[in-house]
Image 1 (cartoon, rainbow, N blue to C red):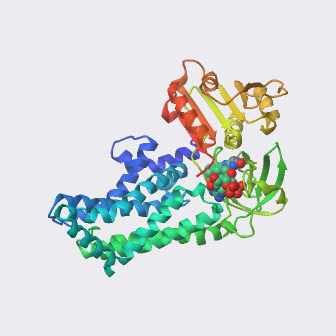
Image 2 (cartoon, rainbow, N blue to C red):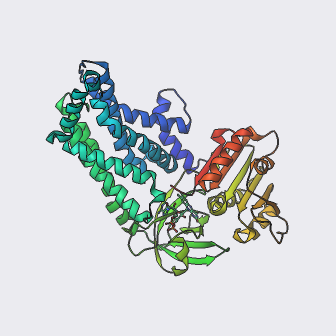
Image 3 (cartoon, rainbow, N blue to C red):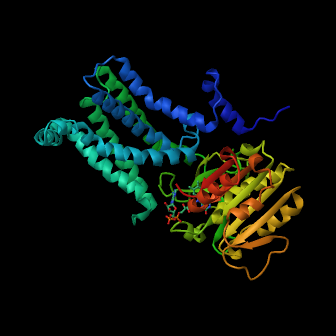
Length: 470
Ligand SMILES: Cc1cc2nc3c(=O)[nH]c(=O)nc-3n(C[C@H](O)[C@H](O)[C@H](O)COP(=O)(O)OP(=O)(O)OC[C@H]3O[C@@H](n4cnc5c(N)ncnc54)[C@H](O)[C@@H]3O)c2cc1C
């Protein structure tokens, strides 16, 4: 009998619509198609009202305005943590798309007033000037003008987030509250000024409906969900330093009840006194037991929070939001072999995958490439060594920037970084196109390694990665 995994069930539920169209797109194509269908929905409704345009320029501009406004509303569920809504369940893709689309929208909305007055430039400079002044000073466009200024500033704040010297939590509060205000002003603007689809007054109901859904989503994420999380608390079982700069944190559901997760996923952890606190950090599940509700993490000291883990106490309450993430051993179930590539803290989800493969008595070749600045930063070394003898076909390649003073019996160590030659050696020659590769680590390492993997013939849809940053 075929064993159906949780992931397959999830995919089956998502599949219905496209299968009915007798079309079998990949998971990535389904996400893009779903996004495009949502995107064009308001314009399709607006077009159905049969409006006639005097010129093609106004037609194109109006269509772009409606598409951009819809893309703006979709930004909220993309950034929300909606794992139960199949359309928005892949949080890694959502966040990547949210960032890309956010930049495009920033540029489009910045150009929006210029595009409206641009045709006047063909008449005369004076016409252009009068039109621009009328647009800025009219009471009718005030909400739009404020939204335009706020949007420009808030998009820049998002693009340069890492260069602002403010705490991540402060930035997140500003980001969400700022865009709630912009959505409110934007909704007022598009329902009161023409060229946003409302040739029939009823069309404004579409915009107000989308606005209401957006606000409901924000309230769900910041008020309702924390209350639900409060009703199923966890507590710390163990907090222990396991390398020069890494900690092992083990938590357990206080009621001892089951917790469903898949190896490779992550959760948001909140160790403050209230689930409403915005200080929540994403960490990958490195191990755990579904039955007893136990989860363990490998956490690297990096900033304020991760450098104060020694203040956590066994027995302390922990609030957990998740699991999230789509990395799973099932993604590589039909491949000839599996390579796991970890950089620094990136070992966490890959340890989870490796432990799951060991539990399933994996017989296919499994290779782990694990890079760090030096040996003192490596974690779980004795477990890895033990797995090389207990798993049927498993080997480890350690990679250190600094030349190690000592060796690790039974484990191979290379000096340098994880480069193309290291990766090539971790995949059986000639099998590249049948191999699955999982990566986790800093963004720079992932982009370089993904390029190298493609160059040596690993298929794009066989490459699965998790970046340790949003
Ligand atoms: C999906 C995912 C899984 C992760 N898994 C692990 C893991 O298993 N082990 C591990 O050591 N690290 C992991 N990280 C990274 C970890 O979340 C950050 O190192 C940690 O939140 C930094 O917090 P800080 O206050 O110590 O550092 P800060 O100095 O505040 O931040 C350092 C960096 O982390 C980012 N960051 C800070 N807080 C958050 C937050 N709440 N949400 C998202 N990004 C934030 C900041 O933008 C900054 O780039 C993961 C990150 C993501 C996105």
